[in-house]
Length: 484
Image (cartoon, rainbow, N blue to C red):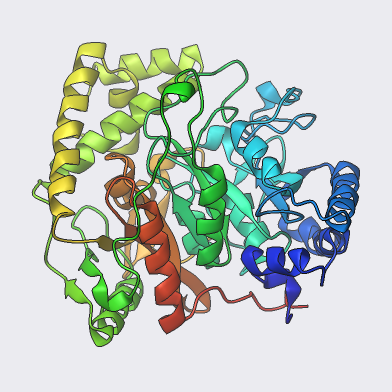
């Protein structure tokens, strides 16, 4: 097998089952690469090397006896720092939680290990996962594999980095505001924002918190689209107090050939500028699809006002994340919210407005959300997937200005707000839709991607679309200097 470090987890699992490769052999290959490359990247920030090597030895012994632990038998993995791994810290990058050591695994880690994976470490995140970059006072800054002066994105930035660098076979991230999708875009890998509720988020929360967060999802990240489907087969399933009464039964593929997909392309919005070169890549995908015989529309949209949709998302997003802020910050939000004009759409205004919603107003906003979800459902009667940007630019230079309203990005020769990109994240997040992030090429030597949005529970269809498209346009490309 050529370049084992960048092979798919699916192929590696096959090599292990066929006994052409040992579990410890593969783990040691990745550990050696991590030892070489991680110091400059600062992506893996917590380790359990000896425990992982003992598990790999046990996995080899099990195979020798003819036993299989599952579809991920012997596959090395790391997970985002916010997922509990027994014996390792879960800090959310917050010095307040710097000494917090998890006593048990998150549901996601239990499922990975239950399927045979070998988790050897955890990857870096921004403070409380609330940024599109990856840096914090506990672990420092994670750098892009493509350019150390640039960010790998966030909040699953460390996760995307280890995949792009070939330090692991499989990763897991989370998403409420693009936290899984934008790192995939910036690093040229695949990531899947799951339909809300299909993958448990238990054990992915600040210490002491057990209630799931609205719109928040966990999902797999990989270098190859087929690995997302492999991981979904492991991760999706009921969990929590009501688990005995329900099951996850995702529907079959809407199509299994590109020519049979009905595709809408949503490449631009007045609410969030996107680099023209990324739009060109996305529109070129449309040309490939037309050439393959697919039905493609550049103009079809769900029946709602996009500004109304986006305001609703921002309000619910800030309400959902408000529990993570200290009391003094919440009081400051209350004071600011009392002074805001309805037209103030700055980051600080949206944050204060959403974080201090009265419960009655939240219920009214949730009613609006339900009507928007129904509009999406009607739209997906005529289309199978929607292709849209993920972020405004390729990977951007590190910008750690604590005042988010003063952060800007250069898009098509103009400075735009760093926070505008949330529009693209909200298209799938607010209505609970699945979205697969997939690479579509390069701009100035940096990878860029798109998101493939599908109907609720259409996870396997968006993943399969990504896999089929990669056969036509290519997929992940290793960054210079990281090949074996």
